[in-house]
Length: 81
Image (cartoon, rainbow, N blue to C red; front, side, top):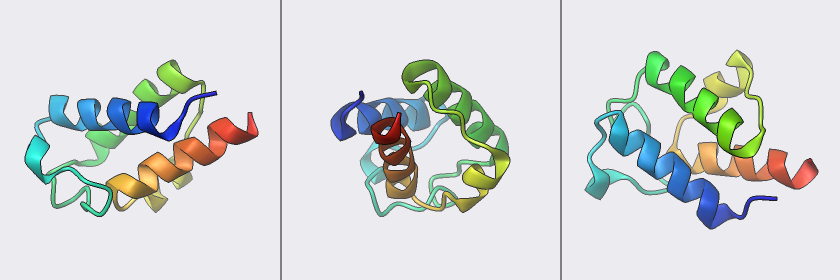
């Protein structure tokens, strides 16, 4: 089971690799404000699946508006696994 800190690190590192400014990434940061687009989100969902075994559907991804949303969703899914 992954803890929230691990999940946050993987998501943050991924967003930085997609070109987001590290200083702007926090739980409240909106993905659109970080210039994260649907292709980045698709790639992020693949990274999450590889790292944590959590499969995100397109519906799940559509619900993610902020960095915190992504972290909470993965944490919730790994806790139930």
